[in-house]
Length: 139
Image (cartoon, rainbow, N blue to C red; front, side):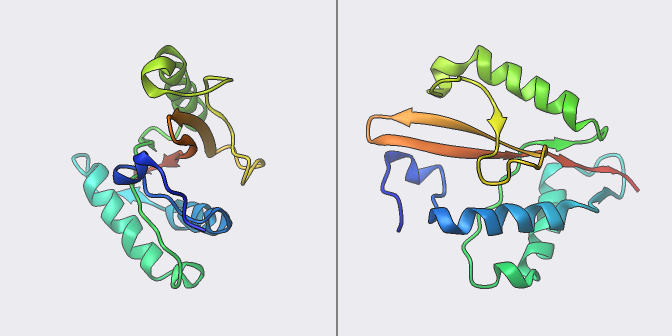
């Protein structure tokens, strides 16, 4: 079941049953990401992760859109999650989040501290954004 929503132009929407597989594959694929040099940042690292995901057997028949914005270059995921969470709370009206107006543990992967979610409201209904925090250290 595809969700119809005005956010579909800027938020890829997947069938709910596909989300655990996609998140799990992103976590597996990102587990050993490393920066090759100091100037290597988001675009190149995302391309490396995309290549890994294309080869992932669990994703071969699944839709995926990768736009992680939570690369953590010092490896301190807890600090990064706190910083992102504070920003979401401070901007919850602009972001149209709904209570509790903050990052919460993922309802799909609740035991994984690298995955959080926020719920956003638009006139046509609510949608969830999954925030995946990926530690990327120097080689």
